Image 1 (cartoon, rainbow over the protein chains, first blue to last red):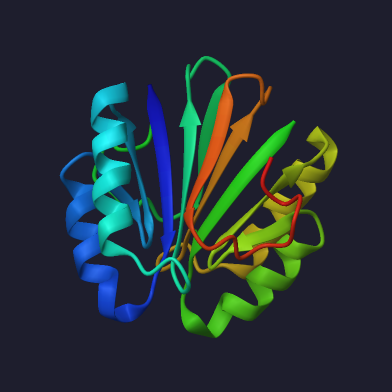
Image 2: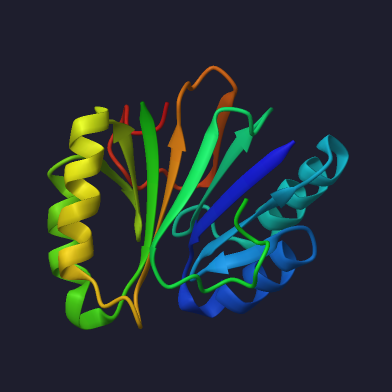
Length: 87
Length: 87
């Protein structure tokens, strides 16, 4: 499946969260990562993130797409992530 | 259609971009908005944002979904946007 992950976490935990996300997904923009990920790895990523974040302060949204058939990303301005990071 | 918008813009233009986006979409998290939007309004929003941003510095990604049938958002931690902002 294809996942877009956006995080809004306390500065203290940004590096840890970003590092963890990068193990599974591609960075595309400040606080945004995306990529193909298996169901098993997605479960692993969620468990690992839940161990890092403070649930009273931090928020992470995972937009989980079963298919990218109806999915049309578009960029205004700069493409910050490397080539190929946007579909 | 349903759109998730993420912005990464220079601090100087954040307020203008956020204000413009809020006219069409719901705020869900720092730098992230989403919502149902008509094709005509999406075109309008893009044109208006292109007038605000600096294309050498800023980046806005629009994830445009023709259908939310295969779309499963999930939150870890806090839900920052109001109730009903996440599908």
